[in-house]
Length: 109
Image (cartoon, rainbow, N blue to C red):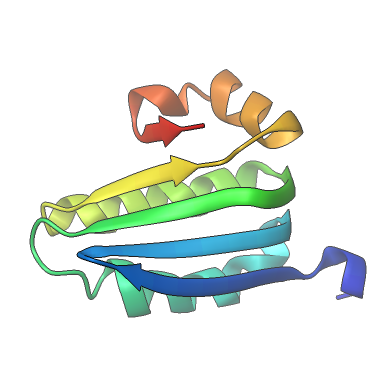
């Protein structure tokens, strides 16, 4: 994977919320790193917990990335938790809009 294809992931805690900040290109090549986030934060959330994916630093998503977000949503639902998507713009926001993710997630500007 070239440096231009790499996605950076950082996490932080704020109250009862975990914020997962993504930056770069969110594509299939990020599936292993995203799976670690899924296991470490979403599947480990307490009942009623909340994970926010901050996509402000993401410049591109593909259909595989959208599928990964759906996996996170299902994992959160099994724990009565919630997933929020924040900061999407440009191509990323268009993909979320076309895919009608606003009907599945809380999407914040």
